[in-house]
Image (cartoon, rainbow, N blue to C red; front, top):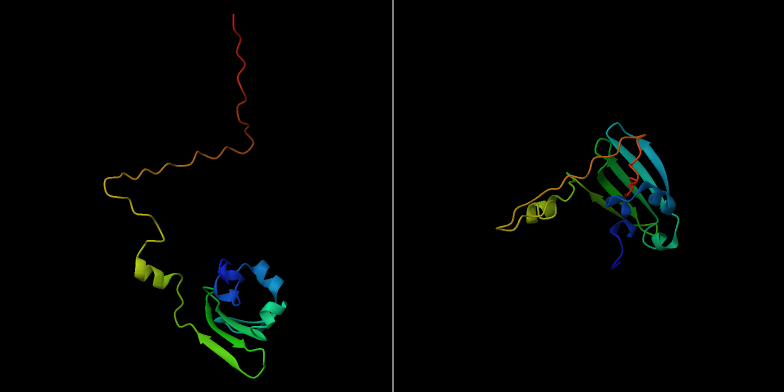
Length: 137
């Protein structure tokens, strides 16, 4: 998997894969309704995924859409692995270890941070001024 995006890995459900990519790789259906959770069942369309698991059940928190549990059924059809996520956070461990290292760069000692605002958006319907004609005498 070196050099590949993590969402292209064997379990993209945990890493924010786009819905379009998930629909292309899996047959997905809702398994049962629950007021607090969404329970999905995904079957792989491609052999590379079917070699890793028969199908996957994903339980999402309805409010945050974060995974709360995932159950992976192995290709042999007799064993499964269950993963429970008590309080999922986005980059929680990274922020604890490194603080805001990945959020905003620090200004080096002796430097001054200057933030340039982008130019204002043109007003819809107005046209940019063209080149001005000049005459010489």
